[in-house]
Amino acid sequence: MQKSDADIEQIYRWKQEGKLPPGDILTAASMEVRHYALCWDALEMKSGILCRKFDKQNGTGSFSQMIVPRSLRNDVLHQMHNSLLSGHLGQKKTKEKILQKYYWFKIRGYKSMDCAMRKLWGEQNTISKPESTPRTHNEWSDTRQAMYGSIRPVSYDTEEK
Image (cartoon, rainbow, N blue to C red; front, side, top):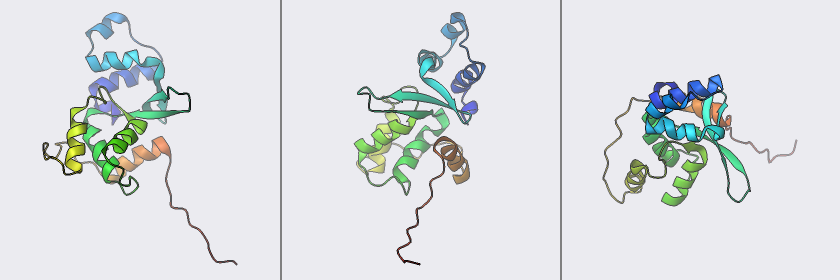
């Protein structure tokens, strides 16, 4: 999926090769590619997926954020809000939850995030359904499982044997 995004694919390839290209190539690249080049030391490969390692400022921990291709960004918003495991967190907490697991160029200024949150919460119907290629549940699940492992229900036996 990341290889289908032209900007992320370049960074993905360079990260696999283990080196950034010369400055003249970066200068001619898009703003998004240059942004990821500036984040170079924080980028890592996890199970074949390009991620950004984020360390909390207060030093209480770090986590990996999957770099999301442009074509999946609106899908991430909807999945993080509508998933059975997402709960009902409110707009602010949902945004925080997204930022813990995912990253993309200009994510904090992502206009669609605010619009999608308003739409999901029914405050304002300002955007239409995203026009993207349909994704199967399995494709999305495979990506999440590769990143975070599988999540299975825990069964508790209350009867003594």
